[in-house]
Length: 409
Picture 1 (cartoon, one colour):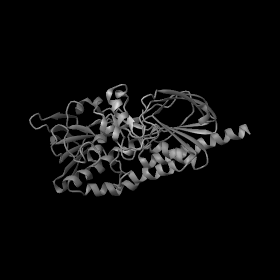
Picture 2: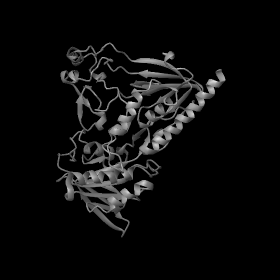
Picture 3: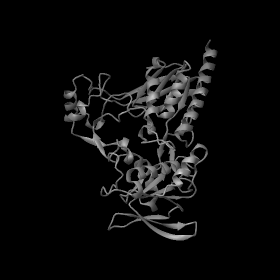
Picture 4: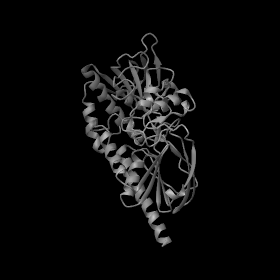
């Protein structure tokens, strides 16, 4: 497979908004790009957002534009379900080993969904942070690219897999697919592997994993989405009760010597945005309380912060709660702490607690290769700054392959 890439190729690792941006910027400058993504679809965590802040617009339009640009550019080759195993070499001359997992579905797929209707097995839905289950033959989400179903490896060799093959009218189910190991060449590597949410279970005083009604900010984002696990209903996981009185806890695991020392930059704005989801769901009956150290909303975000601050359904408490308990009779969560404005103790009861967890790098940078980090692989960034970072990484990669081309000529 070395023939799909050369020393003039830019390899972009990661197909989220950062990876797509870097790939497109390089390709539209005339460079050959190989974009690899380990999941079955491009889009990354941006595809899992219900709305952006501060305009509360949907990410669909931005993703659709990028996907249209990708589809129309012959300089970009996309490989999904492909994970980088090893990067060897130096700038201008890399050898990269990829492990490609079987999709069990080929290019004949029309995304008709017959395979999903045929199978009975279900698996946790990673695109809803495992808050619900989905069929083991699935299209990740409506914006998935490639627009092609996947058969989960757990049903390979089972009667369900045969049912899927029989149900497909287009010969798209290929149960003979195997894992492949490929080696490709590249002149430059852009590392856009994104971020992962900090493990909230490590913040033991907050009871995530012990109390059903303590969830994370990324999980709340999916609850609010009409395509999410509850059809957009903001309800408690424990009993399905409407969650109208919600605590949003800032810096859950961030700016903390015991967890992540850095500020993750998106958490304050995400919680401000989430209070507006609650207002939209429940109107004047909504009650959102933001527990915070300080609110980091600068530049273009400040107007949105002022708007939320003026919202009568939103209360701000300057405090980082010390612990969360559970009221067993009601299932409510009870936050214990000290309000630093007045220095009085509180034991505040809420339907639901949402932890604004920090972000950490999803995949470490290769130690023996000079790759260009982009987006959240470089730093904790929001979508806008990730795009800027990725454009810069693409320009650096272009310079490398240009120098390599001059050296070869």
